[in-house]
Image (tube, rainbow, N blue to C red; front, side, top):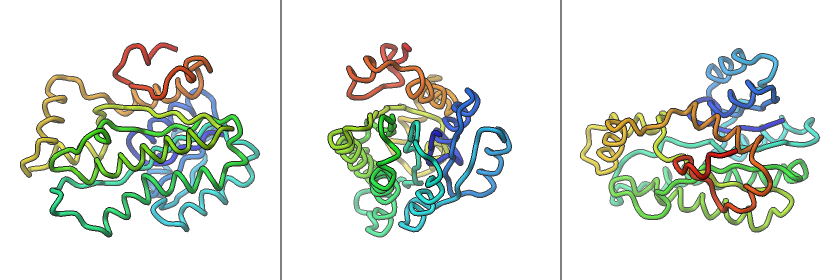
Amino acid sequence: MFVVTGATSGIGHATAQALAARGHPVMAVGRCVEALRRLADSHPEGIQTTCADLSTDAGVNVVVEALQPCAKIDGLVHAAGSAVPLGSYQDFNAEDLSHHMAVHVAAPVALNNCLRDKLQGTRIVYLDSYSANSPRVGWSTYSIVKAAARMAARAAAAEMGESTVIRVFPGAVRTPLVETVLASTAPSETTEAFRKIQAEGKMAEAAELGEYLADILLRASEEQICIRESWDFNNPEDRIF
């Protein structure tokens, strides 16, 4: 059984579909009941769904309970995200920041710990971002959240020796979050950067990333996993399986 969070849209949705299309059972986790129903209908033999809000302890517990009958998890993809809005540093809202941290940082930690007995030998995938390296002017909240998420993933890699933690850099991908940024009318360096990538035809589709993550989970050798601290979708050397 593969577990994919954030499966109602974007990269999580595409990854769940890619794994199911290859004949692997998937537990798809998300917040939208209707989107989960459509996903399950697309692969009725392979996809089970769990509706849960991972920004809450109750939501995490729903996922843990749903996976109790599962003896072992073959792969776990932490793809759940949140709609981090554009805005200046001066517009920070502590309550909103806590919500984003809960989804990107606290929920993966809680799931890893609660499911640890089922994660022996499992590949655990995190979606990293180069925004964690330096602040995105006009989108600082996203940089702060992704920096914390990266350290949480690195901490998991250091301390969860029975599992293999894999960080993947998707780059610019057409997801609901990126579409929101592209549609923004507020002046923003981030918006202009994404529009330039789109105009140059360098914006990847979520389906491409879904197939890529499925390849890492299913086809990458142990040697390939061991020699990389992270994987970059835009690096040709990281796309050979």
